[in-house]
Length: 69
Image (cartoon, rainbow, N blue to C red; front, side, top):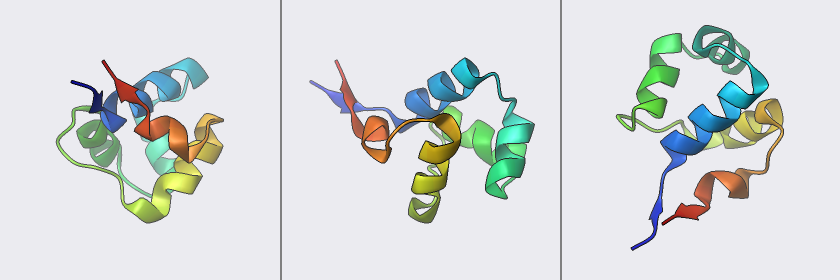
């Protein structure tokens, strides 16, 4: 079964860009703790942040919803 893992996508793209959780949070106006929770699949970013996430990470919003096997 395919499962969408937004948390894995955020973590993967953020690391590829070489951005710390603290810096990433600062760019989005959220805390490093919020980013950590997203990446640990404990919480999700607010939908209004998705376009900003994609812009910062140089990807499309759709990339966050690509299912993993």
